[in-house]
Image (cartoon, rainbow, N blue to C red; front, side, top):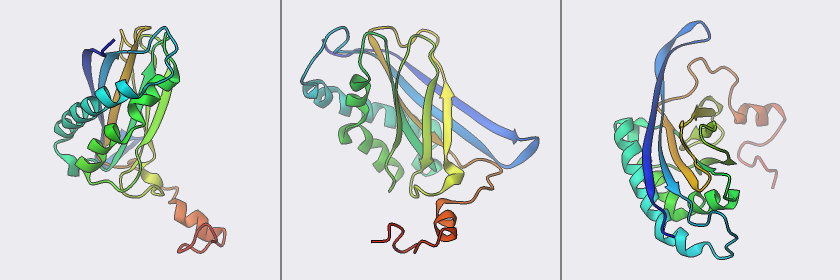
Amino acid sequence: MTPEIRKIVTFDEETLVEGFKRAERPVRLFAVAAVITNPWAGRYVENLKPEIMAFGPLLGEMLTERIIRLAGGGEAIEAYGKAAVVGLDGEIEHGSALIHTLRFGNFFREAVGAKSYLSFANTRGGANAAIHVPLMDKNDAGRRSHYLTLQFSIADAPRDDEIVIVLAGSSGGRPHHRIGDRYQDLKDLGHDLDNPAGV
């Protein structure tokens, strides 16, 4: 079965006040999701590669174009991530197959000029399941201010034989971040920041 897109859903929120204090710079979280039929639903398929090759690039390119437009350009995106939610007649592996391929994620990475890997979530659920997309800084994986999680749901998706595929981004970090970055912890623990692994 060839996957079919049933609907495209966009999510966009802007936080003006956080923790009883006005944000110095409002922060936007946004996402674009494709609700698609699961080509492997209801059966075990050993070789997933034909569908990955055929549909991964189409999804990656389409969702990237839409989220860049929603954000107002690639330079507006500071943190990013991806997710898949598989309906009940599918495996977690089915969602992973479509988002954990360079033929999907590289469209987004290149469009925003990123250096970090795309953070991700793979879950299973029914219609209106919570969709969580973890985000991190597109250029610095240790920058904790940009560790965010975008959450939304789609009332009628995923159906049992569907997968929801999501790209998400943020215009900045948490409004009042004050826990420092990973590098400060490493320094406090006596690690050489030029050689944090000690090798």
